[in-house]
Length: 256
Ligand SMILES: [Zn+2]
Image (cartoon, rainbow, N blue to C red; front, top):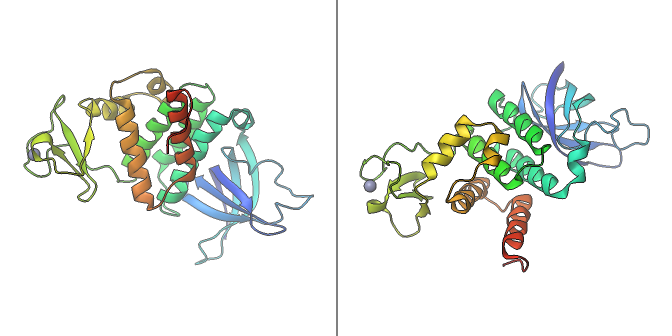
């Protein structure tokens, strides 16, 4: 059956001599992995529309039960050519694409994730703090996909996790606890953790990338680690992002 949809291209790679495999987050279907027939040939009708982070109008054809649509055509709604000229921005966007590909269930549409992707790509154009933009994305995305546990009370003693108090996260139990109940191996979060969740909820990506909250490094580490653990593997682009940032912080000398 032939259908129209709109999506953000996440990744596009050669499938064979003629076709390309395209990962795309669409408005009506969520994450799809489709085949663009003939996209490798010299006379291909896709032009540059399948480049990562373009927003495109798609015509899809899907045989029932195959789970893999054929991309019949794609036309650009919003191009992102200028973004890819800046490697810092590109790296942070490739990390975002990788997280979506690894952690979004296929063909489950979440309109809020689609809107989040568009908002973050649009903010990336303004060349703000790309690391903070990535953090903003991760906080929202991991929460929307249900990976972030509720921050209501300590999962072990039930005490409220008040602002300013110590908070720990257990990877085994997937829950938060207070300082008194923390066990070895739990991940310590800064007392400002509440503030990160609240501010990301209240602000746009650009607004969030302009503010500085103490404890940011710890919180970044927490959400990056959460993405990696949920993916069950290293995330290459995220890894490079982290190493590059450490390199910049220390003025050289990438740490192992
Ligand atoms: Zn407790």
